[in-house]
Length: 391
Image (cartoon, rainbow, N blue to C red; front, side):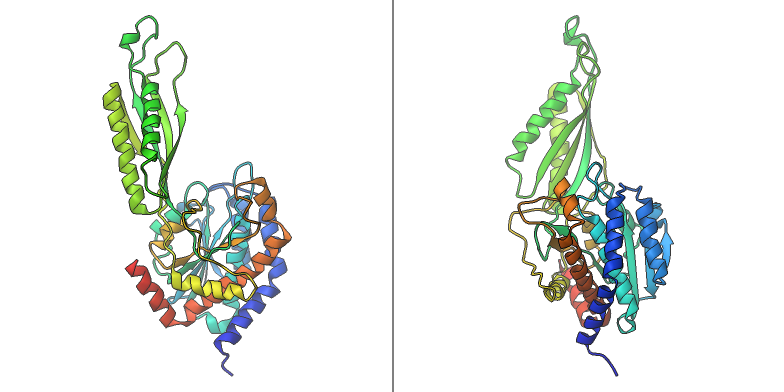
């Protein structure tokens, strides 16, 4: 007898429930053994091994990254990608909850593959290293990992339960000033102070910051300021993090930084060089139609998602670069109260708490059901793609 859509969703939730203990064990093992950007070797081995045991065809070393991998069940289109992050923060461990993201993506992929009626096409589990520092998803997207995918799904633990992630675009630039060394007492007029130029750039950017649009800001640090107090610095360098609400606004801000550096150089008699120091994270483009599906499925577990609070931004992520290519979701689901914050020791503790365990099961079920909807409904796929192309 053909099962109804509700029956299939129920079967998926039962598949996840049957794996709940095993998924929590994966989350705890990752939590107890944090690894960092592009060095998540044990995490990648654990997750890809679980996929192989689930009869996924695993490919390691994806996009030239030793700790990136994919696991595929089925072939062709339709295709849905379930994303896993597993890098940690130096000194803080899994203070962003990536151990839960990894376990949820793994569990959803295994559950969908276990219910034959919803596994038409293919299920792609994607291991994405270095979200915190390096942008594994950027490299994977550029390598074509998501070229034949109809949707990319993941969740993120947080202090809010929001259906959509207000994630900004971001990039880092290194600005260097070259001057001329001299003795500050013996021949000060011969010196051209590169550090003074760098300090002036900070001052100019502080004034600029008062006129930037909402969501845009520049934050910098001095990475080289000279070698001795009795030498006029001939070289100075700063690293600047730029963020903006949209990728277009980030491009404008980048040009403003270049203009400011060039203006300071002219005013101080130095020369300036501004070079991009990192990959660029694009702003996140939410697939509203898919986010609504996820929220409806999650509500069955008693977790309600709301729209993000206006004017509140939750940082940046390389999922933005995926969302420019395919319809994507990245909801936040709270594992601690709003008076907390991620990237703290308290959040790392919350990522291994009883509340996190309940959230893990619920979001894995919601991800699995949303993935099944993508695979089973041509109408849903067409609507998601139509809105994506129009955005």
